[in-house]
Image (tube, rainbow, N blue to C red; front, top):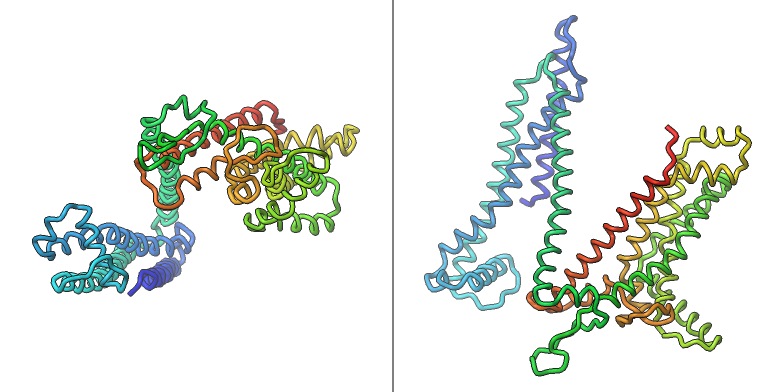
Length: 461
């Protein structure tokens, strides 16, 4: 029995519990003329369904959490004595082979008859585990149904209990989101500290030579590597700047036109066409940048007598800007349309023209949403990788010339973590340090944007 079948069974039980709980409440309400339900019937059904679904789900989650440790201990106890005395890493590898063999997978070693017996034992444990989890989950659900059934009566405050359960679920979801963020930051921080124990933070933050490829032997050339990240961050900012110079004016102006000047029919036609740009895969943009835009820029530059690289920051930035336009235009359009019409009518009543109303009333009121859309676009530009790889290259050049090849932080992180890596080397750990600095930069941009919004926002309430 698979986990999906167990989920179907639990959903069916919850639906049945909802029906019986609601029916019991309605029967109690109609038994006497003076009897009225405290809550709507839907709350009684939901209350019983929660009592069935939540205990069963808790049992299933607890079982899935504990089952691997229990099976590991039982398999270890069945192994021959020489196998039990292996070091933890080799013992874990052996048990993994036994599990793979039992499930028909590939193993790294040939299993002896004794180990084959353990593999058969593992198969029986899996079968027992699946049926055990199903039985206990269903039993927990039925026990919850019995408890909830006793509480259902017309005077029972079902709505209070259901709303309390929903509030707890919302708090749990928020807590998970916060803890996930904290975990991501801590993982970056701890690995970055390991990197900075090998490489000076001053060299990383202010060095201008980036060559993380280290030799295998100490006597080879480049055995120490170079971890000056300034060229990488400069390349990231250069491409992001070019992309935003393309995306912000086009996206914002198109949003203003669609929201304030275009007819509803024209807006309904143009907005979906603009949003199609957001659905194109980034690899397609990369092809377009590498095969069409970059050669065109090189040909144009050579016509003017300029030295233009075959892969340039300008090609990547232009195409990235086109890709980002829908993020700004669509979000800004929605925000501008959300400005109350009474503000426009009041401005017109004061004798202001259409353009004056847009500049002095609508845009200040929509400023927080517009700044949010621009920030989202900046984050999208900083995180883009495929277009940069295909159109801007991998060279860590410290330059402000948009006709030269550059690289970005995300591209270097992908390069550093591709293939077989040692997570105790400075080369691999440098990816986490790059990610940490990128996180700090993005956080700084958000703080600046919040300050700008608070300073220039117009409040009309």
